[in-house]
Image 1 (tube, one colour):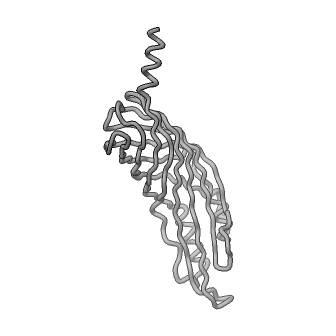
Image 2: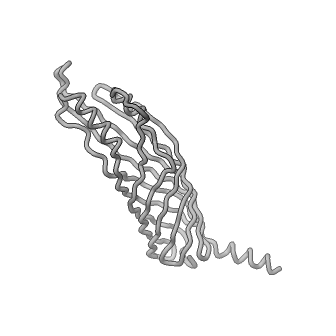
Image 3: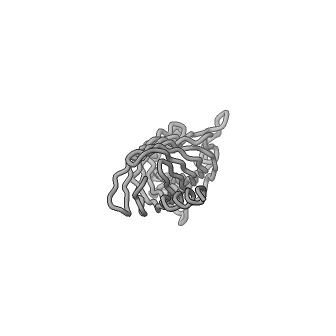
Length: 220
């Protein structure tokens, strides 16, 4: 009887929240930058080389189940960045543009602990990095690379109740894949001569997200 009563109380106190938000990450893609700089050197007719990628931005959606002092959830993060180069192509004497699109998607299992105002969290992530390109004369984006790596994210939720059914959280985070992503296919797609060894990029970054939690908020 006591166990049944405890389980019933446990379920009553549980809170299921739907989450949606936006995140901005600050990233240092030094190996990617070297490849893009080599592309500019190999094509001196370009008036503008690829701009450095310093930010990844995108949205997050998911669900979180909360009990007193602990929460668990799942979510999907979609982050992207793009850069382009352009110039007057000598062979055709016409303007030419090449764009690169970086799309990092993450499927996460999250665990959080803490009180009403502050939660400390970590995740087990499945990360998928897509790199695509589009150039003058092509109508669709061409997939250059698709690679999967596991990883984790470490974060703090700073919670601000907005109503009995809504909570806003500021979430500083650090994103860490367990292994680097390969850039060999990007190198090949840019028609650059391969260098000794494999070209890799970690895509580790830190940032901040703004997350809205919709659902019952009492008893976090």
